[in-house]
Amino acid sequence: MSLTGGRAYSILELDGFVLSAPYARDGWSQGADSSMKLPRHAEIWLVPYLKDRLRKIARPNKPKRAWVAITDHYEPHGMGVSLETALGRVGRWRDQWPRIAGDAPRDAAGQRPQYSFFYPQEEYRRDLVDGIAEIVRLGVGDVEVHLHHDNEQRDSFVRKVIEYCGRLTGDHGLLRQQGGRTVFGFIHGNWALDNSRPDGKACGLNGEIALLRDLGCYADFTMPSLPSATQGHVVNQVYWCTNNPDNRPKSFDRGIEATAGGGRRGDLLMVTGPVGVRFGGRLVPRVETGEIAGYDMPTPSRVRQWFDLAPTIGDDLFLKLYTHGAPERNLEPLLGGGLSNLFLWLAEEADRRGIEVHWATAWQMYQAADALIQGVKPVAGCSAAVAIDSQ
Image (cartoon, rainbow, N blue to C red):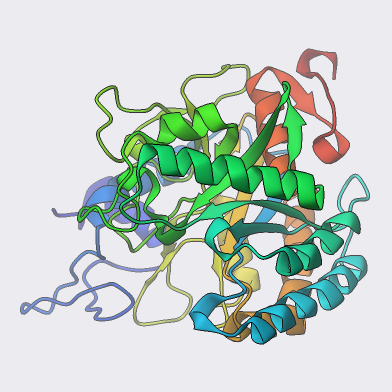
């Protein structure tokens, strides 16, 4: 596939690199003719990304509000550590994150920064979740559902989710009730949502989208999953996906964009993070996915790009970032200044663009999106909404 001429080339130049340059790392390969090859699995996402860039560059109205959420694939036992180490990791977050949030800029509603811990079902221990629940009670965090599984069966999946949500709700006072049932946000471990790996590993469960809908999932926050082949064709959108009628895998691969006043258009709302191409003074471009990690910390230039790439619904922008914040390789830089800088730069960039910024949990981000989809304007903390046409 050639992208070296015409409109596509001009869009790529805006993101800071030229296709004829030779690259060889960060997922970009170099051929024998010394011309640049596309990044891994670019056949899935690159053309949709270019179309989205053109659309956003040409849009007549710029966003007025930004909802910012950090979704942490929070795995205290990550890398096979002992219980003692896992408890120490949770303790560090419990002690330091509330102080960081308290010192950070408040949002337009006066709310402190928020942090969403997507805690894995298979790592559940009451003492570990108790530590995170303390953060939630301080008003600077929330807990949602994360799950790794393999060769899963329908009945066992249903049982796992019901039992786990029951523990989080009954034993810890987490999650929430809506319409008479417990609801939750979801991140699939190993990014293999709806059995989307080509080899069928790390899931095995077809029809997962419909099951999540029926079990009370209000939105999925798994994407983007680059450079994995599990990535869907839809990028930089909040969109509706519908379970494939024959239960084929990867039902989220296509969908219908969520729009202001557009109503529900599928089984499950997909809240995706930014996808783009970042140059940043390097010879080799890097695929941007909104990940915050020790090896790729936030910078003012990344923050600017996130605002350019993030999905929008009407006049509202939805910036979902992600991390794996439990292991020390990320914990240390995040708690040691990375998060403080992040919220400062986010607030400064929003101010520079004249955008009203709102710090949000995953749940609050969903509430804001849901209000807009229903044709109403979200208000402070997303705890209520007022009609858009009354503003």
